[in-house]
Image (cartoon, rainbow, N blue to C red; front, side, top):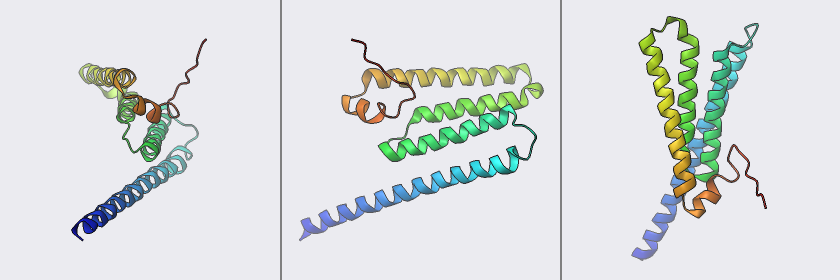
Length: 152
């Protein structure tokens, strides 16, 4: 009896976690889409042209949506996307406020972007070199932003 109760509680717990996980992903995804559409319609389309910061903001929304989609498909948080989003956000900040920033702040932002790029490189290198064969197949082959070709 105790074994059956434990098995049932474990199944129920797994179901509750999976349900919360899916619900959370849909809420986050819907919020990203809603925010992107609102920004596009009410802030970008009301101007005669899109500025560089508008375009970079759209890239941030795209990366957030891709991160949610990959998390939904693989059940793994693609940390490298957070680095890409951070680099894009810092680039956007730099592009918008370049004229008002002093040299020290500009160097600090550029150094932060460089550190994030190095971190992304280290993550990619570590993933390619040290990931188990199962992780390589399930996480990158169909989701990667580049194509691999076999040359015989």
